[in-house]
Image 1 (cartoon, rainbow, N blue to C red):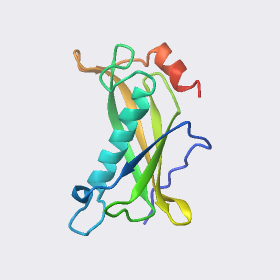
Image 2 (image 1 turned 30 degrees about the horizontal axis):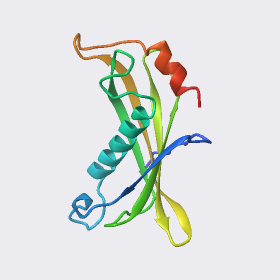
Image 3 (image 1 turned 90 degrees about the vertical axis):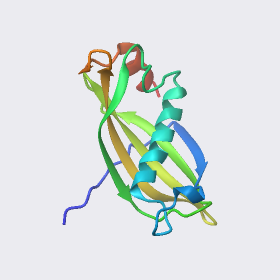
Length: 144
């Protein structure tokens, strides 16, 4: 079986820390795939806010997720402290990729728990169509 392999960027200039809540656990007693998507959604929103953006307010256009890939490395459990680092890359005419490095705090330091990538497309929600990435937004994302 072929496995997904996500190649993370060499550097990340944004990160946020979260704590896993009891409600984040599934019937297996660990964080499930649906919650991993919620965690990276929160990190993505915080990353965009660091530029003064929101997913529906990105220099006059919106953003929509075109694809997602997750590569799990460790289980996450209740009260685990995690750090999610976010970086933009691979900008093109319509959008960009966001990469996420999800680490958990251990007694030995931060350990990789998962890697993720989302493909973000600029979207006009009024006319329901893809649009070009605003130049000002592209410049901000690539300035780091």
